[in-house]
Image (cartoon, rainbow, N blue to C red; front, side, top):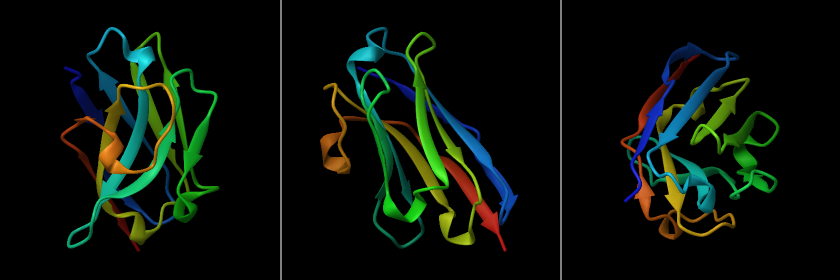
Amino acid sequence: QVQLVESGGGLVQAGDSLRLSCAASERTFSNYAMGWFRQAPGKEREFVATINWIGRITNVATSVKGRFSISRDNAKNTVDLQMNSLKPEDTAVYYCAARQVSFIASSPNEYSYWGQGTQVTVSS
C-alpha cells in the first residue's frame, strides 16, 4: 500500500510560481509511474502531468504545457510539480497519484493510489 502526501499548495497571484511536492511511503517507489491531477469545484478530475519510473519520459496536459513540469527523485521518494506563470484557471485541488507499473498514463483510472490533495488558488 502506497501512501502519498502532497505539500506546497497555497494562495498566489496570477503570474506567480508554486512547486508542489509529493512524498511516497513505498520503498519500491522507483517501480511506480507517477502523475499529478487536479479538480476544480464542479468539474471532473483532470490530468496535469505524468512521469515514468526513472524520470526520463514525461507528459503534460496541453493546458499547462510550457508552464508546468514534473520531476522525481527516487532517492528521496518524491515527485514534484513545478508550476510557473499561474493563471486563475489553474485554481484547483491538486492530487498526486501512483500506478504500479513503470510507464506513464494520463487517465486517472490507471492510477491505484492517491494523496489527499493540496489546494492551489490563483487570484487575478
